[in-house]
Length: 409
Ligand code: HGY
Ligand code: MN
Ligand code: MN
Image 1 (cartoon, rainbow, N blue to C red):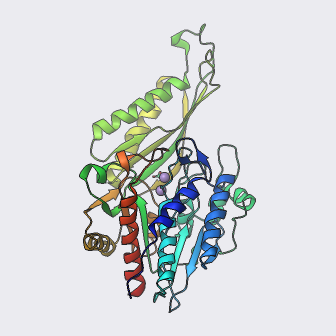
Image 2 (tube, helix red, strand yellow):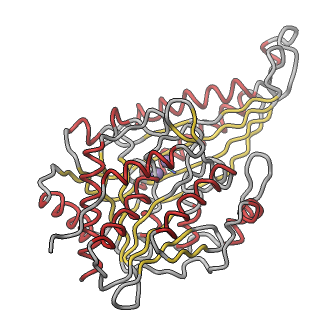
Image 3 (cartoon, protein in one colour):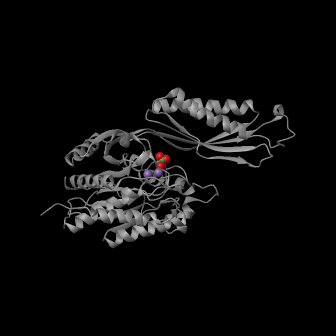
């Protein structure tokens, strides 16, 4: 009897169909966590899970787990990712890992295979952290790194709470987070950077995830007339924010190596052409594969922000939105991905992930690994995000074999 075979056409169709939910110009999708679009995406994927006979559980933070029974009871081999997106989201980020996991289950059904261990395909709430922080919120609660109450209390820019939005979209489930503790966790994901493509490599055996530091900075100054106020009398919050944004780029040039820095959100008040801004609220995203260097980057950035605000006669408040140290994946899982890629005749390299993933939280619970496939031009969080179908199929085929290896062991 031939082994299970993935229905690649069905996988590509599922990715395209899910991308229609919250579709935006350019072929991407916007399904910010716990919005109506996220609900629609959740409802669609849950309907697919049920249609293929999986038993669906929803926990109190809205994480969804689709179970496929094994010959034996016990901790499942879990795969999955997220289906929430950023506002300029592509169709593969997160979605690919969830849909490929469902395709693995369909292939096993078609081959009449019941694995020794149960299988589970999951999607976690608010991986992106674009609307509510921290990111990887659902998997962090699942892994015990954030209490349910803290997560429920998180608010978006309009003051809406996670707990209320979960209830509103019908995904505040009854299962206690962390109930399903996996035997192992493996996630297929697009790389979202240029490394694999520039190296001409098809598969990434991901070694871990770099450290992440997210801070919201609020600079307060004095609104005044743009024409009548001499430069010597200004307390211009907008000017301070601009200095900090420029400093962030200079900091990465000074530090070099893996250090990255991004001021992604920057909002001035009152945001009017003829009024000196009395408030600037911006975000600072610092990341590094090395924790000591990430701490050094934070120290230098926060010192600069304080000095720049003081020199302009402004005050400053900082709020930590997310802070995760670098994570290393289980060596055995990295070896397995690398070995399977070679067995499939695919080029493979080891690399850390520049992006955060639910896998970094699952690594707190069980042996965890990730399979990367290349992103064209290294582009992601952009509607033009693209991964070649052949690369998707290569990654999904390795996911199937890795899950089988883990579930039959
Ligand atoms: O920000 C990240 O790395 C992820 O997309 N949440
Ligand atoms: Mn992702
Ligand atoms: Mn993302």
